[in-house]
Amino acid sequence: MGIVPFERWCARAAGSIRIRSDREEVFAELYAHMEDQYEELLEAGCSEADAENEVVSAMGDPGETSRQLERIHRPFWGYALRAARWCLVLSVLLGLFFLPAYVQGLNIASRHTQTQDEAYFGESREEEECFDLLIFYTEVGYRDRSDGYTFTVTRAAERSSGFKEAPEDAQSTLYLEVTVFNPRPWADACASLQEFSAVDSLGNVYPSARYANRIPFLTGTWRRTGLFTYTWIIMLKGYRSREADWIELRYEKSGRDVRLPVNLRGRREAAS
Image (cartoon, rainbow, N blue to C red; front, side, top):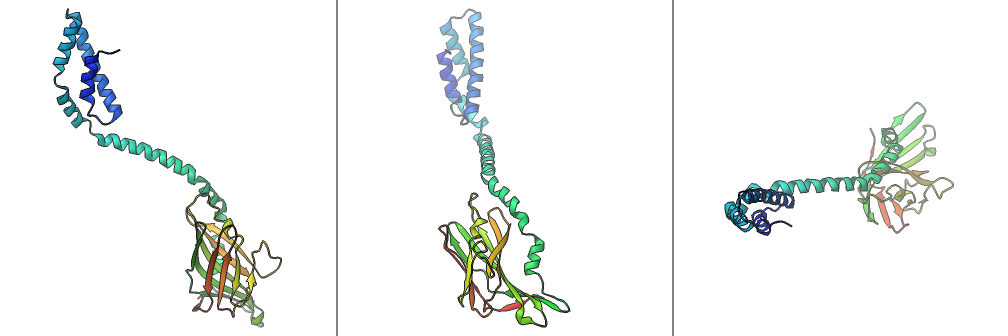
């Protein structure tokens, strides 16, 4: 047990220091100093009571000492250190929290390359006997939200390939670029498009490739384009809606209800 008058004096003197670790350190230093003086007085022949009073008197007013210590031990750096520690802990936790989504993105990033993108939305090509014509649909930007996901159509284009001698037999594929955003790291942003289907104003239906056993059908490929964003290229194989006014992507499973219409009568521009 310590000497009570010394403890009281030190507690008052160090009480204004707001950072606990600093306050405890200053308290210990002051107490050790007073204890050393106390021992010296005892060795000089003073009684315990007189030595205690002498030491406390020599230390002066604890209130004045407290004000001086408060000016020295400003709380800013102490709070800054605490904030830095908490930021470090939070960064580690967030890193562990978002790591699965990041790794998942790395695993699928290679499935949709820049070369593929050029194949889907690149320039029209023409050879001596064949043609490969790309037409862009300029009215895009359609958006819908469901179950925490935000789906946006960012590009739409039709690519027709065939022989010049029989253009009516050309095979066409409609390409729709769709971005999928979901801020939840655990969300399965890729599988969210595996069961999309499409219909047009003429009543043609394009089921998902996983349910279709023949053309026409809808399929897709994807790439990671952000921490929470994936970009899909939705392909409508056997596209036959040239006379339709619109075509609509639909997703009505797993608690989601998504409708993404594309105006097929908007202004068209052939790729140069």
